[in-house]
Length: 244
Image (cartoon, rainbow, N blue to C red):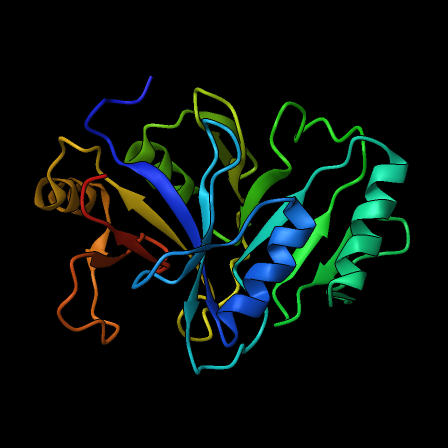
């Protein structure tokens, strides 16, 4: 079980050129509501007790290259998979080719701002007993999987051939890392994790703990804010929020 003082996954955040438009897409696709949350962007609330928020933060930067984080959406049946794909296309998504083969059973799509995601075939054993977002799928090393297991207090549920995955003891979405080769970063990640200490926790102590695990504090021009921007051992940005 995670330590009660360990940070929890508060949100997965998208940098968005049109935060409201992108929020409407994902709300429609996932069946969630859109919540205005100034000054912290627009969010979709968690799904279930073990879920996380999805936040949409304004940026003028355009997407460059393939994202290093994407969602894998689950399907309960072939019809459900087809309906999810059709709904995504209706909302403004599109089919994309990232090198998948005709034999692959999952469907690769992009949202209206080009963020990749997959609609996974029914019966996928790795995503059994997960949420609608079965996995937050990351391009990353084995070392970074170990880091996040310690950071969140989530046990490893997969550790083979340098591929790793973790999941909350309470269930819900997994976070997975595909192992080498890890693609080089092409600037700030379009998606990042936001974590937060519990209400009675201490942000500074948590930042120090994460540094001891291999994270670093970084400056991306955030200025004077109440969150701390850090990078994991692979250089992926994440934020440590104030206790909540």
